[in-house]
Image (cartoon, rainbow, N blue to C red; front, side):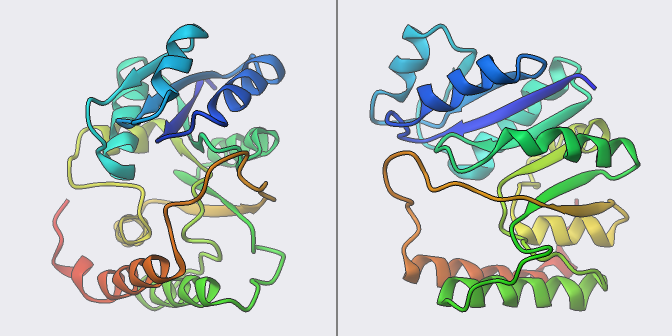
Length: 227
């Protein structure tokens, strides 16, 4: 399958070179595009100096905006599959071949789950993840163990769907909505790394707010959403 990694990077000057160089060296069978999401550090400059394939937003558009830019790139360049991939080093490309095989079996979205065969730790953040898993189960009758995982593979049909709609993004509530509309979603067990550099913009408080919003959105708001 003709595959592209969509690497979203926001202020990842400490990790982006390591991520891209490892991908180019060890997985040359895959293409990639770095979506510099309005970084205020040297991320874009590092991409330029190293001759990476990248696009830059003049301002920060957030995860949804960067994701859609990547999907539009994948659609316009005829890719059969797109890999949602972080620029901070947390994701392992070694799992992508297996995820692609699952798309070839007929799945539209394949999520790399940390918890498919392993238990979630008992933390406040994981409590929020459990709530989202419960909301998805109640509304779709299917269980997604790691709904916030950012390591995903999308097939050509789903690439086009995301590229053509401004109302769709990579958030769990959208995934739940698409599942109710017949999009086939599955998971496979993966492990993730600690980020190479920098800090996550999610604090415990902001994580809980996000999880609560997703829980309410999946249970209530998505029923009124038209896509």
